[in-house]
Length: 236
Ligand code: SF4
Ligand code: F3S
Ligand code: FES
Image 1 (spheres, rainbow, N blue to C red):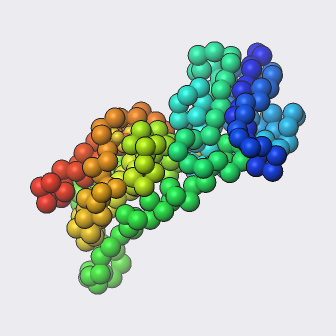
Image 2: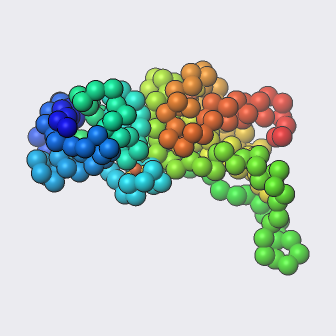
Image 3: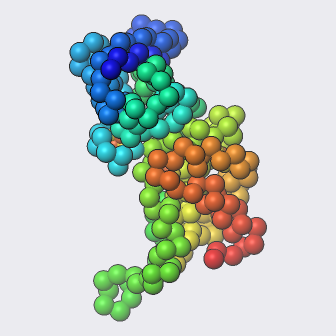
């Protein structure tokens, strides 16, 4: 089938501002948008730039806007789009470096700011091998372990567009993953970080983040649980 693919391009060495370029592509409806981008780069314009790695929805590197929605290009089939006219743009709210490649550093700075790692200074118990956890305690934060740091949620959030100092849903999801882990002892410090001006209270419960998440994480619910833990002073 014939597809018309409009891509928002920006080549820093020659462009003052981004502009759309249109490519005509012959492709199979069962192809993914990532396949089409590869085809354009391989056959029509070798300068087209985008990130990709696994091509199977695991690495999170190819998040972009396709027909106005934040998605992973490797998870979208052409046949699942509304029309044969496809518009591809970089994520909103992060600086465009080139074409579909955005600067992820501010996103990862927010991620790092919530201390996304196990904090526990106690010596390892008994046999010194591992800290045990029962299945119910493990289930408590199972959903937020699925994050692949693709940034689709944070860059779909109007609060983040309005102020990119807002820590954003992805960082809160990754804080949630440790706050509710029974083996972790850093909940208090993380909750105090997220209670600051650019923390969870910037979230206005818009739900764009939940809709955008390619891992189907209940992002808004996780943010709500963190808000509640701050308000009650209890992690449960
Ligand atoms: Fe991506 Fe979902 Fe993680 Fe947000 S929560 S970074 S959308 S995987
Ligand atoms: Fe933004 Fe998601 Fe909250 S879209 S406002 S972080 S519910
Ligand atoms: Fe890895 Fe799409 S290329 S998630």
